[in-house]
Image 1 (spheres, helix red, strand yellow):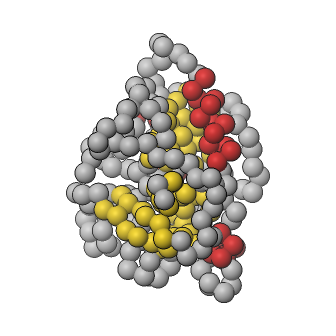
Image 2 (cartoon, rainbow, N blue to C red):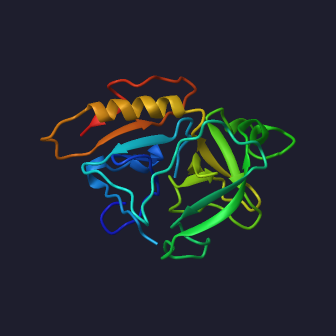
Length: 222
């Protein structure tokens, strides 16, 4: 969030690392963002929509603040998943929800999402994406970066949607990008600077099919 305005959700991987969507930082700098804890527009299809934010101060687990684990394997299509967030509750809603809301949705693998049999998004779905949704529940404005959870593991990060009835939402596939996440986390943790006053961010947000590794451009200290 930025002062007085909710932007995106995310999840806590450890005491320093927040996982969210890269497009949440499209027009703002990391030092402008604040992370709120323990509370009860895209031009093209984002191929790698993921960001990792290193906090200035550590966050420890409490009764209302918990870390989440990365997944070891991808769920099958039809697996029940949980999504939650403070996004708006409908097209007529004027603002975000005052309470954390959740919904049970069905996980849809990237191959099934892109298949003609499902007649969903076709060529817009890439190997770094998965889908999830239900007939009467979906992610909405303000839900970007929120997590898709299966068995207490984060399997997806809310990325984009066509906002059409009966069409599932699209999430960044955490299983596919787990190697990048682990490399980015290690790289950020190594950047120790006790005099630093600003947070560090690693972003992976591309609109092409060319995949790059962790480098000086993907890890940014502002």
